[in-house]
Length: 93
Image 1 (tube, rainbow, N blue to C red):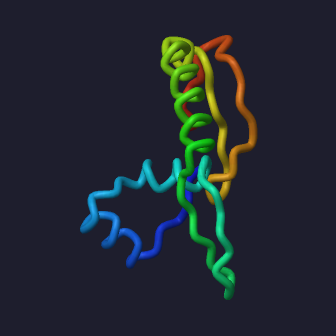
Image 2: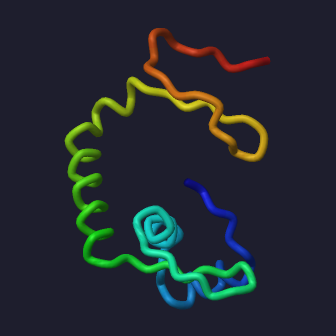
């Protein structure tokens, strides 16, 4: 997941020492409260934190496998497909 952050959010993130990755994790694992006017408040509760820790443990156990996988994205960062590397890809000229 890669969210677009407004200029204001980027400044506040830096001022409040909340890294972009942490905000992304809140959006992925957090609980949502609708504030109205299309705005939502996200925070991680105990259940979300438990899920995040479980997923991080799994990721750490499989880190070496990441070098054997790939992601292809297209316009606007939309993921088109994912897979396992079977051969080395060449850069388009």
